[in-house]
Length: 235
Image (tube, rainbow, N blue to C red; front, side, top):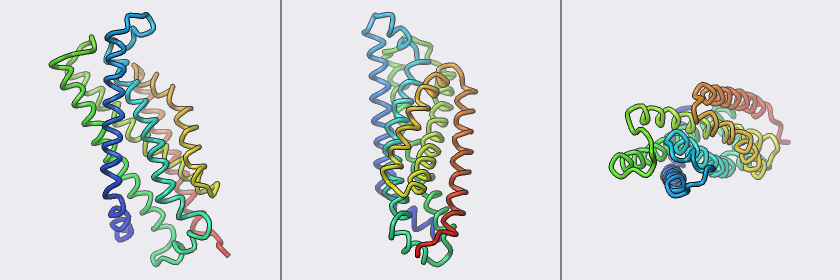
C-alpha cells in the first residue's frame, strides 16, 4: 500500500493548494462578515453576533459547508469516477489487489484534504484573531481561552469535512454516480449544519460526539465498500 499511497499523494500536489486557499478564503470572509454585521447592525436579531462565541462557530459552519461540497467534487472526480462504469475494470487489474489500492486512494484523499483544510482554517482564524487583538470589531473577551476554543472547533470541523465527504463518496460509489456524491454531501451538510452551529456555540461535547459518530460511520462505510470492491464482478 505504501507504493500506492505515494503515487496517489503525488496526484494531489496542486489540489492541496486550492483546498487550503478555499478554506482560508471562505472562513476569513465569513468571520469578517459576521463580525461586521454584529458591529454595525443594532437590531436585536444581531445581538448574538457581538460575541466571539457566536461569530467563530457560525463562520466555521459556513466554511464547512463550502469545503464539504468542494471536497465532494474532488472525491467524485478522483475516486468515484474510477469505480463506476467500465473505468473500474482498469483499476481491478492493477497488481497489489483492489482493496489496498482503494484504501490508498482514500488515505491520500483524507491526508491531503485534512491537512490542507487545517492549514487554511488555521491561517484564517489566526489572521482574524491577531487583527482583533489590535483593531477589534467584535465586542468580547480576547484571551488564551478564545484561541484554545477556536483551535478545538477548527479541529472538529476539519475531521467533519473529511468524514462527511468520505460518507458522501461511498454513497456515490454505491449509487454508481458522481452526481450522487455531491447530492449526498449537500444533504449531509443540510442535516448537520444547524447541529454543528449550535453545538460549537457553547456545547463542545455535542460537537465531539457528532464528529466521532461521523468518523465512525465513514470508517465503517469505507470498510464495507472495500469488501464490496474486492468481490465486485465486472463481466
